Each structure stands twice: as C-alpha cells, then as structure tokens.
Amino acid sequence: MTKTELSKEFATRFNKEAEHVFFCPGRVNLIGEHIDYNGGQVMPCAITAGTWLVVARNADKKLRFQCLNFPETAELQLQTEYSKTGKEWF
Image (cartoon, rainbow, N blue to C red; front, side, top):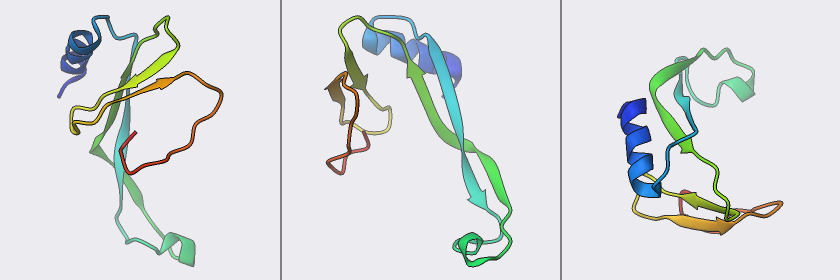
C-alpha cells in the first residue's frame, strides 16, 4: 500500500486527514542471528517491508489504534505511562 492510499484509508476510518505518515523499514542480518551478541560480525540491512504509522491529533485525549493486517482495535485513555498486558499487537 502506498503512502497516499494509507492516508486515504486513515481519513475513511477516522473522518479526518492524517497529519503525519511514518515508515520504519524491516531488517535482516545477512550473516546470521545470535552472532552479534556472541562477538561475531553481523551485517544488518534494511528491507522494503516494514511498518507504517499514520497519525493525527484529536481533542478527546484518547489513543485509537487500528491495523490493516489484524482485526483487533484499541482505544486507550491518554495517560502518563502504559504497559502491555495481553497478546494483542497494540
């Protein structure tokens, strides 16, 4: 999915325009796993698959999470800290 398509999907789901779109590329280690912390040489490489994040502010102090790949959603009240409690992606 393109950045433009993601922005349109965000507008459809949340009835507002996206303010920012972020992308974090995935990574592979070309030498192998578990070598880096055992003192060996590793050559990490970014790949085109990754995670996109589309965000916009709201006035109701809630964080709403939705994903195109999973059906679960989350709505959390804004607070000073959070901790993960379940197996869900959010």
